[in-house]
Image (tube, rainbow, N blue to C red; front, top):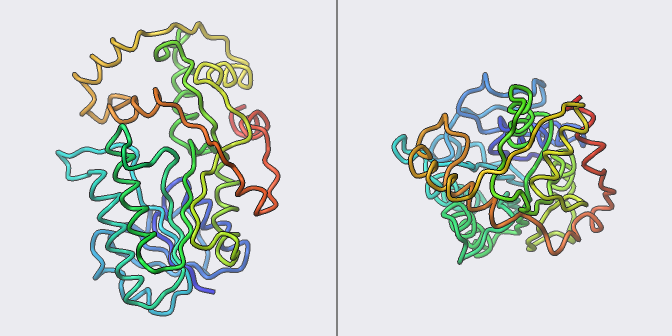
Length: 295
């Protein structure tokens, strides 16, 4: 069975690609730069193209059974032409339209927990609009909305860990009480791949979270516990972070932008995590998974 995959060079896409190969699927991977593809295997068909340029990949969809769409960004830089509108909504719309034209029936889409019409961020609003386009496409879809995804190459836990390696004193946002429910990249990959032929997931939307809710501060303490580092944690009032983001949020060197901070404040947990029961997947505790690669 041939699977067309976008976002295959990214953190989540790399693990999904490995899992597709593990279960015997034939991946066709859309990449802008083949050098960035971390998984090397003769069974992978590479299509060099751009998610915003359908003419670069439309021919590759002709004999495909399922499309898995992962393209997305966590931060936008409008001055560079990198926006949530383009990468979340427009790229999805273009791919859905080409999928329909190619008579491919199955479409699996990566959204985000918290995405909704009245979201507090452009990130969430554009993710939701993309969801709606998929739902109204006539395709047999499945939409997954993961919480924060962690793993060896993630950009959240590893960023915090790297900061704490360098600093004896670590400043955290607000009172650190923001609730999170991080989910392992390995579990996310299993869910995506196992849903390809699982009719219980057809034409449904699922939130995807870990099995434990932790506050932002508790995650920092967990990293210290696993790595054996002792750090002084100092809270930074939210108004100071707000001011700093106004000044520096548009620069890529600054660690957080407005949308990211608003999403952190809002929290990131799931009311329903039924997908793991449907798939028969027993989740590992975050302590065990983190200890495998942070030590």
